Amino acid sequence: MLFLALQSPIDPLGERSFSMHQVQHLLLRTLGPMLLFLPSPQTTFISGLNTHVRRVLGRVGRVTGLGVLAHPITATLLFAGLAYVWQYPPYFELALRNDMVHYLMHVTMLGSGLLFWWCIFDTRPSSTRYGTRLAMLWIATTANIALGAYLTMKTGVLFPVYDELGRLWVDGDMDELLGGLIVWILGSMMSLVPFLVIIRHWGYKKDRMRKARMTVTSAGSDAVRKGPRETAENTRRLGWMLGLFSGGIFLALISVMFLSLAIRV
Image (cartoon, rainbow, N blue to C red; front, side, top):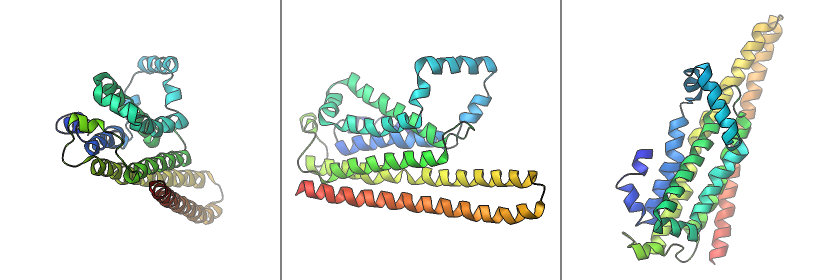
C-alpha cells in the first residue's frame, strides 16, 4: 500500500486531481501503516535483538524524544492534527507547487500514521491501555468525520491550484466533493477494523487474567462461581463500550452534517 501510494499512477494523478490526492493520503497515513502494525510485530522484532542493540535503541529513543512522540496523546494529536494542517489551502497548494514541501507532507503523514497505529496495535505488556486506544480511535475518527464533512458540503473551490496545473476528469466542485467523501466515508470506515481488533484483544486479556486468578485460588468452588460472573460482566462492559463508541460516532456525524449544511446555507 505504501509503495502504491508513492508510485504511478496514483502519485502523478494526485497532482492533477484532489480526489486522487485523498486516495494517496488514505493509503499513506492510514491503510498502509495500519496493515503494517495489524499483526503486532513489535514484540517479535524486539525479541530478535540482542541486549546491546536494545540498549542502544533505548538511548536513541530517549535522546531523540521518540518516547514522547509515541505517547497516546501526542500520537493522536499528530495523526489527527496533521490532516488538518496539510488540508489548509495555502499549505496544500504550496505542497503542490514545491516538491520539497510535498515530500515533507508525505513524510509527516506517514510518520504520524506509523506512530498512531504502533500505539493502537502494540501488544507488549508496557503498551497503551485498551480503553485509551478506544479513546484514541474515537478522537481520530471524529476529527476525520468533521474534516470530510466540511470538504464535502462546503461551497466554492478551495484548491484552485489544480485548475492551474490542469485538473483531470471533473470540475473543481465535483473533484473536491469526491475528495471529501473519500476522507469522510472511506477514511472513517478504517476505524472499524482496529476497533474490533482491540475489543477482541481486550477480551482475551480479561480471560487470561480470570484463568490466572482461578488457578491460584484455593477455593475451587468459589472460583468456578466467580468466573462466569466476571466473564458476563466483562462482556457487558465491552458491549457498552462498543455501543457508546458507535453512538458517539453517529452523533458526531449527524452534528457535523447539520453544521455543514447550516454553513452552506
